[in-house]
Length: 143
Image (cartoon, rainbow, N blue to C red; front, top):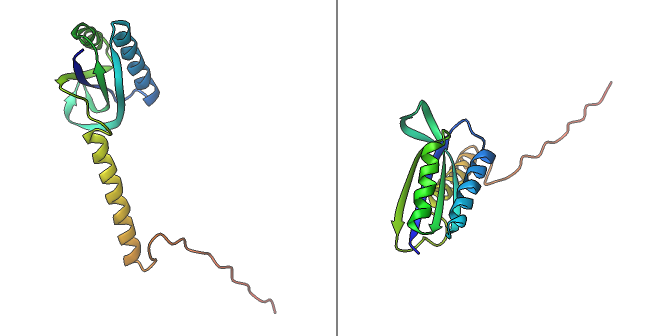
């Protein structure tokens, strides 16, 4: 069966749980039509380059699909009918990526960069790397 990478954008006012339910719904359609989902990744809420149907942000989800073309066509049809889905894109690939996708690797790099920046800031302030400041109690004597 052909392999696909399918990304869809859901409205920003949905909760992460509702987006997971949408993914489960699309997974059921794919499995019902003889396909399978190799992997799904929730990329989180990201800012869009321009407004889509009055939304400035959207939930991004990637699905690696191994299914016949009819299953992909049905998922896309259901997504076009669903008001919660802003956009979708399906690309046929020769093989699925192993490990995290480029978006997840980017998020890891940014998280590592932010941690390094925090350590440098603490060093500039003279606190040292990742040291917890201990609060000492001062006692006063009463006269």
